Length: 116
Image: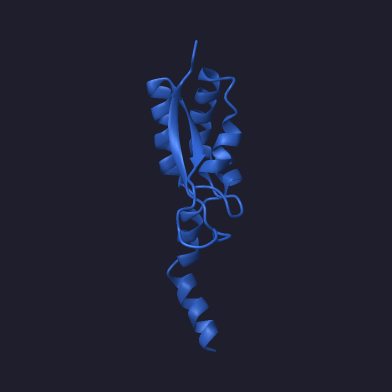
């Protein structure tokens, strides 16, 4: 009975819907309609950069990925197109006490210019 009330409360306040946007899965992020135009523009500008592979790190895939939202990825892609740079996600090293937890992942977005 108590457990049913908890789930009812969570659904009532759209808790699960908000979680979906906090940790968007990588494939959903790549296929998101709001990003398609920017991704096409990026691919045209940087044809040799494996965009889908880099986008996997921006989303959430199992225990890895930055879990960014669509609006955060838009900012990254727009910056790349505007400043003529491409991005990569670099893993951060675990600095905590003890061994690394299975669900820990942190990344850093770095921007680079194409060398001619």
